[in-house]
Length: 221
Ligand SMILES: NC(=O)C1=CN([C@@H]2O[C@H](COP(=O)(O)OP(=O)(O)OC[C@H]3O[C@@H](n4cnc5c(N)ncnc54)[C@H](O)[C@@H]3O)[C@@H](O)[C@H]2O)[C@@H](O)CC1
Ligand SMILES: [K+]
Image 1: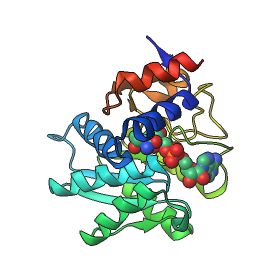
Image 2: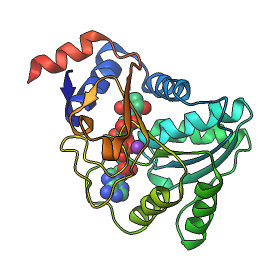
Image 3: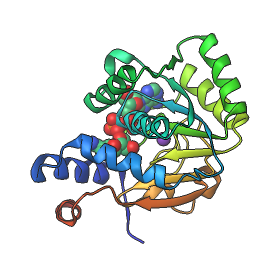
């Protein structure tokens, strides 16, 4: 199976967006719908969703909307500086606010306590804190959040990459979510291959990036 690095994935995303003209929000919506497709909606009704403020978090917010639309119970948590959300994260957060969906900003111990309860009580925890944009060691509140997700969740689904896992080396940067299932986008990432301890089952889902983008990037290397 072809495996790619996080920088190749970023370049493919960017080629699809900037050279082909697919709006990034379309890719995000596709990503969320592909995650939704991989959830056992017959048996799962209560979702604890933990989002960062990058595009991985944006995927989680779009998924939260789709779960709310089909009347699932969602407990939404956001970690990170809300003033630094990406454009597509902000679009999705704004939609949720307009739908009167509440969220907890994990910025103090109160937030972590709520997360413990939600992770314990939920049927599935959705991990959308970091994807291919993880750049440094996971520390402090992020570390504690991942610790709680791993310890209390009945089952965990990671969006794109288990948060904290280096998508190139497969080694945690300080700590990583240990997922039961990982839905990764477009192509398999190097760090997810043969790394079932962290990733659980890995499903690769197409999000509408044309072959032309893939080939253009592979040719560069
Ligand atoms: N337009 C796109 O590029 C698309 C991206 N997609 C999703 O977006 C992800 C990539 O999004 P981004 O590039 O925004 O990156 P991420 O969302 O993976 O992470 C970036 C955020 O995490 C922070 N961060 C990184 N390392 C940290 C650390 N150790 N501690 C605390 N904060 C840390 C950064 O400051 C930034 O806020 C993909 O994995 C995928 O899930 C999909 O929506 C498809 C389209
Ligand atoms: K993730």
